[in-house]
Image (cartoon, rainbow, N blue to C red; front, side, top):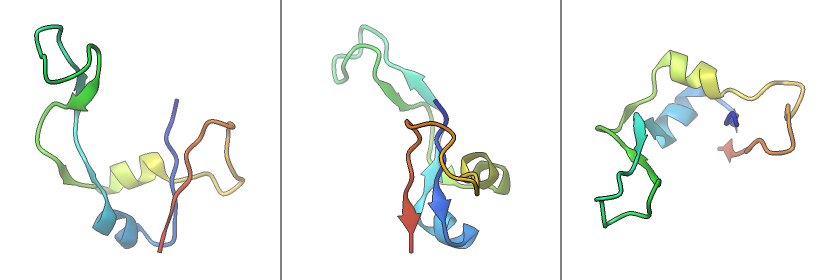
Length: 72
């Protein structure tokens, strides 16, 4: 399921968000539920490609399951 975010300016999105590669937990990681999705590395600032990947479509949600947030 894709994630799309509505925002006013790319700089506002970058100021409030960071991204990381993720992985699912292994059965021997007792600190997490089995199969939980956790960061696999360090958080980093969003790049232009990251911003484009999550930019909401101007026509509105593409599906009822899309998540929308407005950053002021």
